[in-house]
Length: 121
Image 1 (cartoon, rainbow, N blue to C red):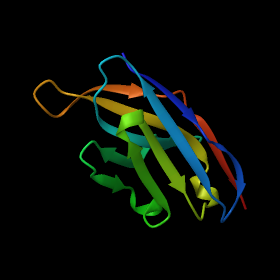
Image 2: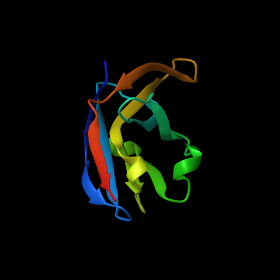
Image 3: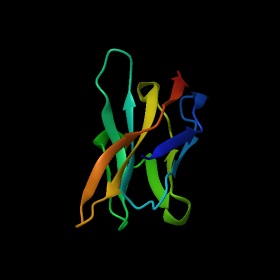
């Protein structure tokens, strides 16, 4: 089992910045993918950004150029730096991770408890 602990959400004005952090706890831990999803009221959960252990990243189009995902593999931690925040970024942000598979790839699907990000106009 993998426990994900998030921090860094809050209330910010439009144009402001926040940094989210998520640290994974487990024994013999190897995480292939770590990322962030978000869910706004009445909407489906959506991928915001993800990063692999090899350094590849991907972002949803609406956050490209504003958000940056990074990982510290030694600390089993993933960060999401969010700049130029907009009211439409308001949501609960969830950390997500997948373990390294025994023969490559990713296995498992682990979630944090979520952290609220609210952007006021």
